[in-house]
Amino acid sequence: MSEQVSDGSAVEKRKRKAKKKDREWQIERGVMIRAGFYIFGTHLVAGWVMLLFYLGRKG
Image 1 (cartoon, rainbow, N blue to C red):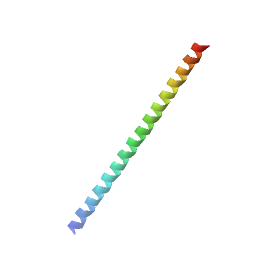
Image 2: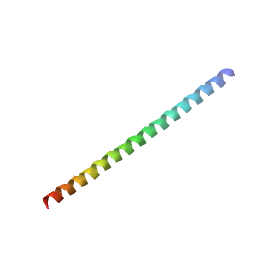
Image 3: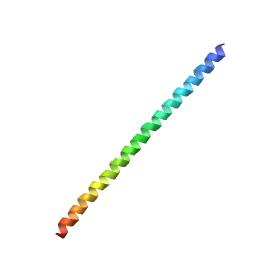
Image 4: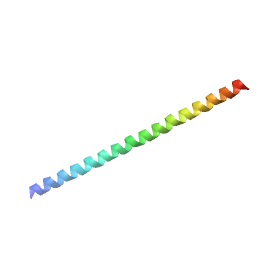
């Protein structure tokens, strides 16, 4: 009977570890998506400013 209890707790530990690993993966994915948006947005704004300078110099 004590073996079943220890097996149950081992299974529970594995489940908790898997949930924690999934959660960490979700957090990393969110950070990567956010970083991608920031990088894309920064380049977009920089391109817009460069275009304004180009058009202002030409005119």
